Image: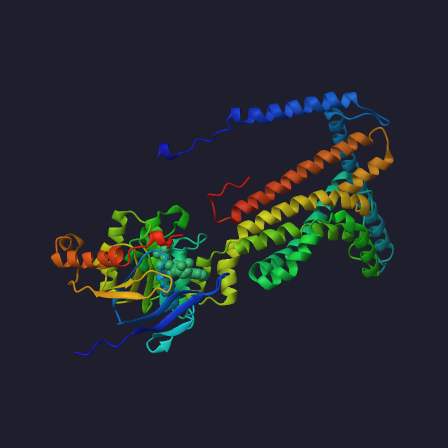
Length: 316
Length: 270
Ligand SMILES: Nc1ncnc2c1ncn2[C@@H]1O[C@H](COP(=O)(O)OP(=O)(O)OP(=O)(O)O)[C@@H](O)[C@H]1O
Ligand SMILES: [Mg+2]
């Protein structure tokens, strides 16, 4: 019995040594280089100033939360009073509309990228399957894809903005236009890698697999479900992962231009603001963008590993 | 004694493949009558068109001329009553051993209750001695094991005709001998009609009722049909000392290496 028990082990120190050394060196170089750069807004922020601004941003967030609580507290008391005076009084609950904090902006960015990416994938996967299965569809659609693919999504942004303004007119809009514009731009750029990789995945269905399906007389739908889809999934997820990476990069630029209150707008506002803290605050955003991008990629990698039937393939 | 009614018949079958250099006539005038329960081997040099014959019977290829009749009905498309064991097993890599067989069983025996299907799948895996590895994935088992699962999948369709394209081609001698013995055993009990392609003369003589020897392509056709009148059950060890066995073996070898010797100098391989 005792032999069966796997003792709990910390990751060996040696495996942490290299990444930690790398990180320390990076921070040292950053600090060193930063102190050499003088800007109109003071010295370029090093790791220390960046960390300070990060704690400031947390503090601002907490203060904002307290303000919000107080607002609702006041509102509750006011409404109770009203009811005491007149039980039939009309009660109005107002939403708190404070300044979005750094963390609200992170959330906004995540929601925008997720919705754009999902919408894009919902379009891209069926299109990829279609052009993978049908040669006719492939020759009809492939030239268009090849021309649209290299266009920077930012080039679309003015067009998307104008189209959204013209088409999306509603009395009480569920979504604001800045969000929609950014979301559509994200959607546009997350189409291509998914389409291309899904189609390539369909191409990996071998003649033998097709013959198995024909001998069994699988119906087209069963063929799609039992043969084509499972065969395509690893490649499809490779495409999805590339798409999400691009989507996150493009989102930041789109938010700057469309003024969607996410991380992109945060950077833009600080740039316009130009206070002595601005550079360090931008630096916080930059690091945050990097870390979130990394986490999103890890998430997709996990999904990719989970759905991949080829457990021997090394995914990294 | 009446000759048995032909169960499967190929009549004047020819096939042309379109190529950039114009149509390529791979087979011509194939005539063959096969009785129910017969074990037939197809032997011939590489590239002569054995797989093409099998694919035509399977319905995966359409002959340019002639017809294939199964129980007097023309074969026009593939179907599970003509199960195929493909040359390279062609298991689906995302399904485990059990699920690979299940795919076929679910399709062929749609109306049966699932408990019956489960038993049937297990029964067929037992036939090829693969029930112990039912949860393994194709990537986790050896070539011989994959081939056995391929055979189990084909048998589980309960086909009238079992078509096998070099089922033991890529295996080592020991595994091959073992699988040949299992195949003889299975065919003894199930009495399927079997058509098997092979490159191995010993295998052909050991397993077959008749050996169909094909001429070299292009325009390959049947050169000779050799009946193997060895009593069953056959045992490879006793047969190896049997003079009839030796004569039959020599006959096939003579056909392949004297009459149909590959004209390499004429560029057949090129
Ligand atoms: N789909 C196809 N299109 C064009 N030519 C084909 C096609 N399939 C087979 N051929 C040609 O037909 C001939 C016979 O091929 P086939 O695969 O039947 O040979 P084989 O006897 O099975 O060979 P091997 O023993 O090497 O498997 C070959 O010359 C091959 O090039
Ligand atoms: Mg072949």
